[in-house]
Figure 1 (cartoon, rainbow, N blue to C red):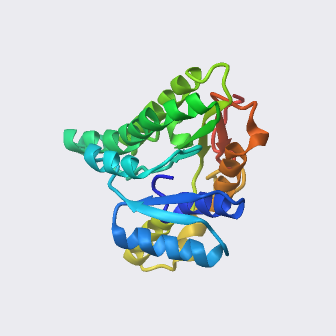
Figure 2: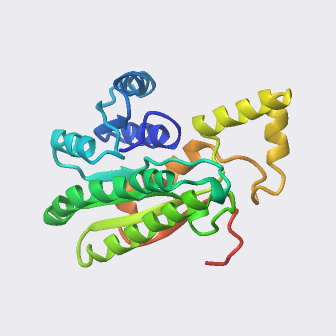
Amino acid sequence: MSGSTQGIGFAVARDCATDGAEVVLNGRTTGTVAEAVERLRNEVQGADVSGIAADLSVPGETTRLLDRLGEVDVLVSNVGSFDVVPFGEITDAEWDRYFQLNVMAGVRLARRLLPGMLERNRGRVIVIGTESAVNVPADMIHYGATKAAALAVANGLSKLTRGTQVTVNTVLGGPTYTDGVATTVKQIATARSIETEQLKSQLVPNMSLIDRFIDPTEIADLVAFLAGQKSSAINGAALRADGGVLPTII
């Protein structure tokens, strides 16, 4: 489970561990991975959990992580990065960094793990996407474009599973109050000399139909469902857990 030491990734890991799955956490540093493993063991008694530190934007580190894994039945591809930056200020280097993390990290994982799933005739690939891949924000074009590419990759991969019990799906999350978002909100609130809750209340109006931030556990619940047997007829889909941000019928 890539990018799983906090936020949505950790919430998914907790749900899967609660359901009895063996879980492998991933983050960029040994310290954060060790802390997340310990936290998950404390929150889910008897959890079968381990962790591997690797920066998945680096091909060599991704290979090292994959070499340490055994058979994988469920790949949750969550690692990614976002930022609010004016289009004209995004350098070629930044475009490449976003592409490596938001697209190629998932490509490398699936390229190695999907063949084994197809051979065993069982498995799930679940990509954690975003509504920004469908409705690209003007101030996050690099983010939306790379997440749209990841969505396209997942759709293409699903076609490789025809006639098998392997599925590939994407979850399109909406504005979610992850650890990263919470840190950003707190920094902005401090800069404006207002309380964090006051800033959150200013951000919420017209955000979505539910008029609030989504909790990571709400994304995780859908992912856990897709990871299980009851989702066997869902394949090649982009399922929304966006709180009603996207206005389109389909």
